[in-house]
Length: 502
View 1: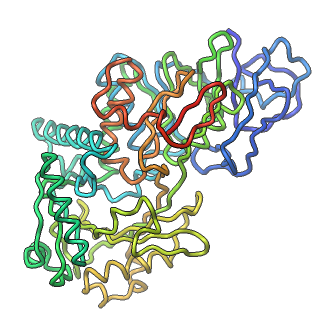
View 2 (view 1 turned 120 degrees about the vertical axis):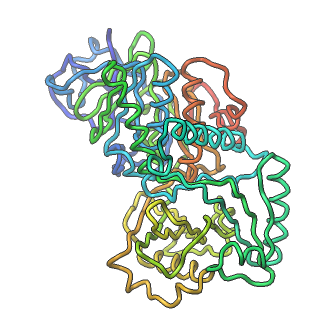
View 3 (view 1 turned 135 degrees about the vertical axis):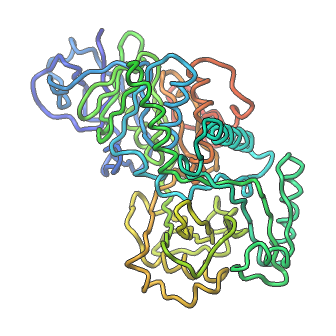
């Protein structure tokens, strides 16, 4: 079968190859300059692309070509190929393996937990979710699935704390002003009406719950005793272990440290039939799922740039810092905490702790948890800074000072003295402008998208996996299926011949 390739690399002169070569009448019309650090996709200045039809190989003897796939490159065949080995991609693979008889490959330029998944705080909280919002049902469903998983481990005689880092800590959303506390009381009522166990704490009750917290007379908090947290690294390791149990059946394969280079399309059907990586060709019989976090937009744009479909996914990176302190006894917490302003993160500059630094919007809100290892984890920042993952000491100082506003004991220690014992997590959250992840099929193809969860990837992972698998298998979606479709009623995606909105 004749096939075409949509590729990420520029065309170079050379003889025609019969081994999955790519042909084009000109260089790719999309302006691409930078490469992402995850999938080697170039980061475009904009997501617009011209429509370009590829000629059949036999009609292109004088065309330039891409570097041909090495004749020694291995070929593997699976029903579904998942691009991205974060918590979303691995959970999707697990769901396919448990709920179908399909074979699954997971491919990633790096390794699991090297992106946003491994840099997060690990909470599975409903406290900052809003009943009736577009993602509420998805959050409720995902929470139920995580609890079911933790309970099943208990039933097997396993400790969820050891396996997942599962901790039923409860959560506190803390308000420091009378205005905050009024809004928190309203939120508690909303959550209770939605069936979530929640209560409002007065300043005196809050002080009893968290003695280390600075509490003023006008302070208050929303308390959700059922909120949990887990260790992302442990959770991912467990999911990988489950997935690998299917290797012996020939149903699962991992291709890590193996960047995706291109998609191979069939001319007669136009569907993607294989994923070309740096080291091998992964043939897919049924579907491809792109779950590449903040790289998903530029990756899909590049992969489809020479096809009849041009998709503009406006997901972009939102950089975040977390400060991790081990053997730090000055502050001990009984629950997970976040300040009320954290919930306004969708619009960075609406947050009272927001500012503009070096021309970039920056928001720092207090979040504080104790992880399963006893470390104090403080956050968090949100910053539009491209794909830069370097530690910014100025932001660490902001996080420390903001945390000290809530925990006065921190003022007794200089952050500079902790530099040798501390750890800093930096991740790029996949941010969508409207705050909703895109979980949907790409029209006119056998490609599916699961991206844009921003800071909720861990908490929404299992529900997202269920949605994607139901889509691919043609099953009716759960109630949470409509909110995350690509077809939304705002700015349009770029799609020749069709109009798709998000």
